Image (cartoon, rainbow, N blue to C red):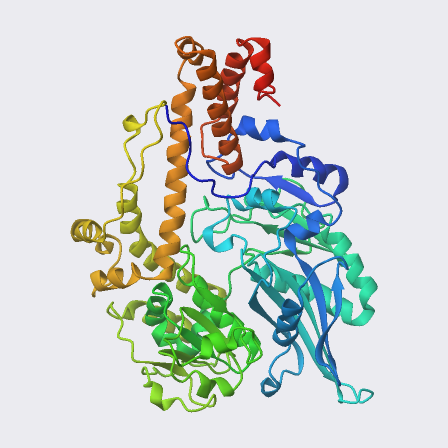
Length: 610
């Protein structure tokens, strides 16, 4: 009998979804409304696990942020981290150095006043959060592009530079930086607009008050509408789920009064695609291909705000597909990966870099694809169509805006979307409407591309009738590129897209990319878990009492231990079983244990019922 499951896929996940509701009502002023999150999980299991994890002080804060840093300029030391809050937060020296250099614009940017941007940097050590299992649970239903970062942090920056004659340098320069694993760029920029001006006026006591507010927030659990009080302001958001219909906003009015809500954010992560792509407007389809294929891209911009916005727009243009390569919204010559990413001894890596220093125009001129953008402030008239330029024409950061590449797109250019958006500019259509049109275009393009892959991968799933409760779950069939290509003739993207071109060539290139590797790994994991869940459900339909009667006591003990391991694995990995399956299996196991002699019951420790 083979009951062993596959290798464990992650940390134990034993947190109850109901715990947050209980705690929020007892110690948090923040409102938490639960919406149906979608299929998956065992409802009875959630009830059984309620109360097994105790949230300690700063745990709620840590669900949103790793820490808050204040970075200032010291005449002797240069940029330096002045404050880390909460004070117990841990950052390695390498991480502190990265934060210091990435929190200030390059001197050539000339950012006077207040500037907001974001950056992304490698986690310096393999530290694990005490909330690891708990956060995995809340992350389970998140869309792929909104899952927590595993090996990187995001830094969300509010930088202020103003003239101050009382200072030796003549300028006040300081950044308030939120460090987080969450890619909620719109949410954290909105949060900084509230926090930073107050902090620059009232300093650390104000920061402490803000952190205490955040430590009373509910966790960012997908599918819930949250009202989050911060420094006298209340923000209302909804964390999206992977079950949401793509391209729609699920933020609905609360049954309770919204009279106390100050800010309602319709999105926590989406940037304004139209504004970001406006400088290179005529090349959006080619840029989509380059991002889809994981090509090495560098964005040269006049400021960190425009650099980071453009990189985040590029990464999001292939949504709902997750961009699986590295990307740096703002990258400097001081970055720890500078030598790794600028070496000429090997081909440029699969990464998107956003830079502002003119030095990069020379250092990265060997890169195959360079996007040069100018000021994003939209002109009254549409920019003239720009041709793709040869790389040798890019000498300095002052070169004209455009895309510098020798890349030939696989798909024919879609003139319809260009005409539609041009018409919007001439008619002065609101920017939000233009953004919605462009986002829908990218969504439909990506879906047309990915649906044939989804259809083929689904065919690799063994038939349910092949699942036997007393044998290991069957394995997924292998992905065979040639077999997939054969399906495209009758069930390819031409069914949903009007675009013509070399779709076959685009797929061949994509299948070699990090984005395909990441997507297929995730789908294979989901399907393997589904097979495990179906195997569990088949076991639940068996009469264990009758089966053990045909076996010796030793064999029965062995069977019980294997079943308990399988049950623990299912709870850990939150397998997508039908409601009641785990409780039913647990009852079967307990029934078998209680029928054994007392000495054998002792060997098995105790029944699995909590």
